[in-house]
Length: 46
Image 1 (spheres, rainbow, N blue to C red):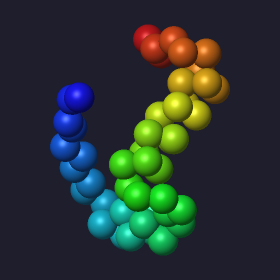
Image 2: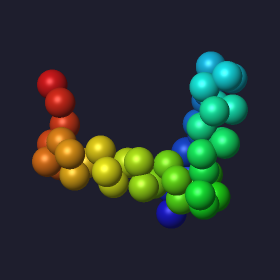
Image 3: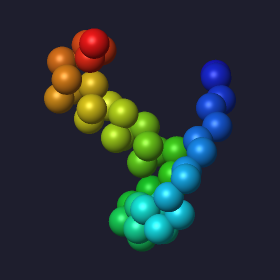
């Protein structure tokens, strides 16, 4: 398993994100990544 460090520069935005969490932060971020991949067809934008 790889581990990544997430740096948040906008503290207000981060506080708002934490308020809408339904699960732990890692699970929520993973869900956002999966959703983004689905909406972009799994391809990287160039």
